[in-house]
Amino acid sequence: MFNRLLIGFGLLLFVLLGFTLWKTFNKDSSEFVQTLNSQEGTDKTEEMVPLSNPQQNLKEEPFFPRQSKPELDLSMLMDSPILEDLTLGFATTQDMQAFLKEAKANGFIVRDRSAELKTVRLRVSDLEKASRYFDETDTREEPNYNYRVRAPELPRAEFLEGEKGFGSSADDWMGTPQDRQDWGRGVKVAILDSGIDQTHSNLDGVSIEEIDLIGGGGSSKGHGTAIASIIAGNDLGKWGVSPSASLLSIRVLDGEGEGDSFTVAKGIVEAANRGAQVINLSLGGTGGSTVLKNAVDYARERGAIVVAAVGNEGVKGVSYPAKFENVIGVTSVDANGRQSTFANYGDGVDIAAPGVGVFTAWEDEGFVSFSGTSTATAFVSGALAAEISKNPNLLPEQTIDLLYKYSNESEKPGFDEFTGNGILNVGRIENRNVPDLHDGAIVGYYFDPEEMKGGTTPFLVSVQNQGTAWLNNVSLEVEYRGVVKNYIFNNLNPGETRSEKLFLDGSGESGKGVRISSQLRLGGHTDINPDNNTRVSTISLPD
Image 1: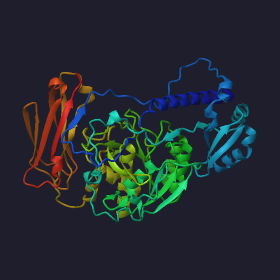
Image 2: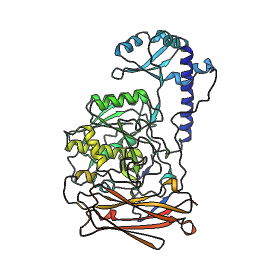
Image 3: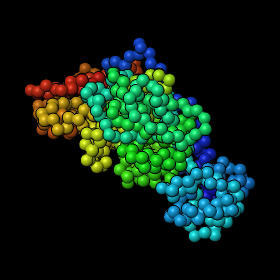
Image 4: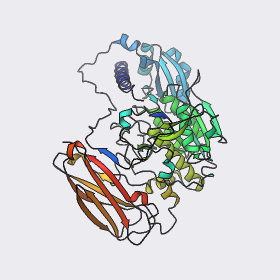
């Protein structure tokens, strides 16, 4: 057991080193925040769609070379920062109490504890005694590294090139009605972040309760204030999605936006115990912490819906806790409905929402242009609060299913690793029981990376019925390189998506790409949302 524990600590050391290198690699990333300029414009008529970006992979586990006879340097482990911050879970409360009673004598210093999660946060003061403790006890539990978490790295500026920002139009883009003063009433939303500036005018009248699990010094509250304003902003003209929701601000991140899994887990438990129905986690990390997963499960068992950001590194590999099964993992799209290039993708992405250039409040009475999956996460939390307030008898799973069922299709038809179930559409949820709404939409062009091998490349043009009435005699006109293609759709039921396959031969002249213009027309009916009947994009294919 002694050797097994040393090996385990050694592997944890490699994890920490890997995390440090990953963090160093990303340290120049900066969720993009831009101070508002009154001349800033977002009304681009055309979207540029590069399709030759190399895909990256975010490694969840470092590679450990095999050794026939592993040997570890005890002195190296004695000085390792890993031993300074570990978590240890127990099967029963009695087991945990027995451990706490003899912790110091067994080479441990207890830093914190959670009775609900039956978990202790500790550091090893004497590795030999700690190893002897595990060798002499019957427990099967072994210590885990207390993984670091942080607010998602702000998207690097190059990630935002060519992406269309929302400005102050994100709510309109999602079909959110202006008359929503009472949305969120009676619903408590917990925001686990760096704190909220309660003095901001955008939050006047909002009920905010604060808990600080970090302590010790000041905190930059800009990030948390932005999240709060998206969810429950209460200033006329700058309303959040649910202006009447109450907020529970739990500070789990320091002034640099950094924290640890154990503290976030304690925050989730605290939020659930205080009756939060929605828990917003615009934060994440690369480690799948057991204590964090247990906290998520604890909250869901008590009826809370947990929402988290997938991360802003632009790689394959969703951050934790967004990747956990009982968490809604949220990604970002721009105002063209395209998944943001900075957003992580893969297993764990459940839904998308606006996340580029959104005007939000910031600390010290500021307003900024805010980008990132944190932004998108707040919109989903606000939409959940709104639906809970209007339909309090729905089970959490039913409320979540409403968001998924009435989401807009993205470029790739069906559930996918980029936008999950689709893009949040508050208007479709609100109008789902209103009969005879005619709304046809061009949802985008999709190029399968597996078929992008040069020469003639197939692509899909997809149309979705986003209304409540069946659609017939719907005409689609697609024009590119002087060629016009016409298609007719019939019997398109509400929510259904259909696609037509076209072919594109190489890139455009002088490297400018190929301009594709599409127009949708409803036969015999007026479309309630004509803005989504037209799509113009310039496609740049790899050579």
